[in-house]
Picture 1 (cartoon, helix red, strand yellow):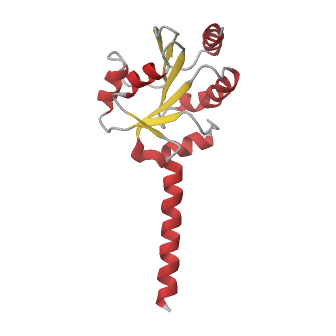
Picture 2 (cartoon, rainbow, N blue to C red; picture 1 turned 30 degrees about the vertical axis):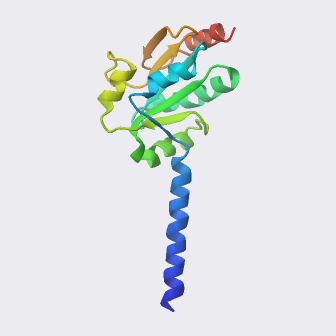
Picture 3 (cartoon, one colour; picture 1 turned 180 degrees about the vertical axis):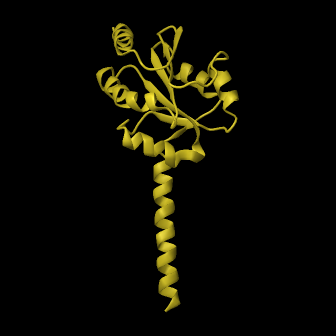
Length: 162
């Protein structure tokens, strides 16, 4: 009698682990090498790098807007990065699901030492969120902190999409 119970318990555990692995695959790691890799991967084209946190209410309000921008401007990558480490994937994915952020283009800090990653992005960035970097075709960037200005953002994306 104990063998079927143990077998059931093992199958349940395996199913939970498989579900966790599938959930984690929605998030990619972002480390100190990632900013340079993103610039290289997007050579000659504009892109947007959005930093957010599970503790940032304004970030939640903007998630659906970023998803809409991805649909409206498919030629401009919009990369969203959670400033929490990957081991907090449950909290990150919960926010992404709750605020309809979409299922692609999401990363999370791959190092608990956030200062190292932030410095690689921008030595002047102190960790405030939301923080967005708009890279034009030449990769001249504009950094913006705080709540999104939809008019400015739409205008920038429209100019870059030409």
